[in-house]
Image (cartoon, rainbow, N blue to C red):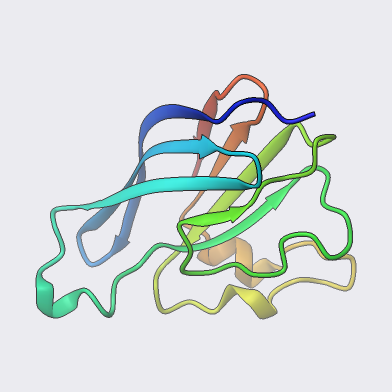
Length: 134
């Protein structure tokens, strides 16, 4: 059973994702159907660069049944993991890196994916605790 909507403040610096712009994950919210990521770039992105900078993320969970989470990328919200899941994670990349084709036949990230990953944010779905691994 899903709990009431909750927002977990994080303020975690993912790192330099594009030419001096750091991505900060301000919070993660869990609603009935979604996991929402509130983020900001620091420093602010000038208006003329807004179209070229976005959080490029891969999203998954420790329990991810077939057909779950079929759409990822430039989103701020994702399908909430199934109730059996304990952890969800977001892998962050430069905006110009195409991570989607870099998985082996077992669905695990390949070497190119791992070399290009800036950081992984692991989020505990029960406690709201998060950590960054570079």
